[in-house]
Length: 87
Image 1 (cartoon, rainbow, N blue to C red):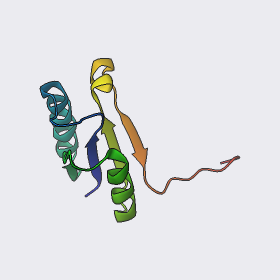
Image 2 (cartoon, helix red, strand yellow):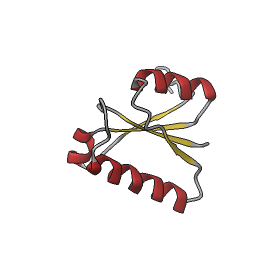
Image 3 (tube, rainbow, N blue to C red):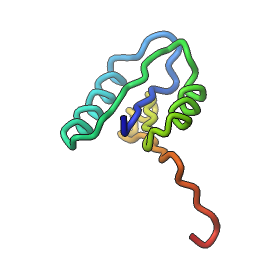
């Protein structure tokens, strides 16, 4: 797995608009031959998922919420990329 997509701000069920946005991200990744997983389990918090996938060494995390869908953007994080002043 090279990318994990984590829906954020979801309490019980993922809204249709958010599912469609996630499907678009997944389709883009697959078209570029990037292995991707969507963690849509609403029983665990996004923070738990972030930590879990960072410990697994997944290189890229994509966070998508309804506000992001409204703005047409998302948040990405790269595992193991630590910059210090002067880099």
